[in-house]
Amino acid sequence: SGLPSPWLDTDVGAPSPAGSATYAAGVYTVKGSGADIFGTNDQFNYVYQPTSGNGTIIARVASESNAGSTNDKAGVIWKASTTAGSPYILIAVSYTGLVKVQYNFSGSVTTSTYTFPNAWMKLVRSGSLFSAYLSPDGVTWTSVLANQSLPTIPTAATVGLFECSHKPGVLGTATFDNVSFTPGP
Image 1 (cartoon, rainbow, N blue to C red):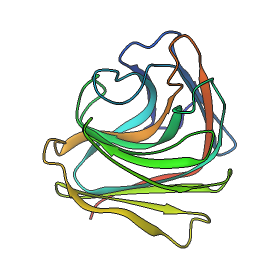
Image 2: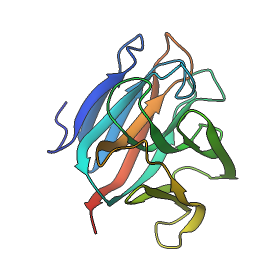
Image 3: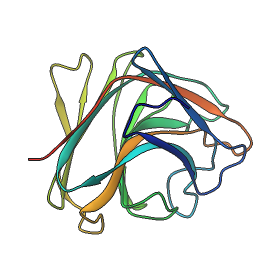
């Protein structure tokens, strides 16, 4: 797929058709199908890297295709592993621009609507505490969820980008740029 090291690509939960990811000129293009990232429907394409401990992931979702469901989603995620059903926290945006923070298949916060390509997202981990932020420009950040305790996400986990069409049998496509992951402190 030509992803820069240390990024890897996999499907979580065996969605069909299988997803994929490519990288060119600073842009990640992620294609994924799947029923959802919620409850027992944990299926999506995941561009990730292993992480150990604290850190910050930032990405701008520049586009999100209409795969036929208003609940499609693309964004950034911190997940215990690449195994379906493992604990997580994510920020997602649908092709309609609606943004939501979800965690551990039970909690969610619906927030603003963003206009593409200006859906900037940031997740910060400090121990077992996770904070989520949004920005229209990558400079001024607004807190959406602060210091959510998620002790079920172990120190050795994964972090990255995702796409879920929310419609089995159909691939959705999202593009991301300005992607960075900074470990620590």
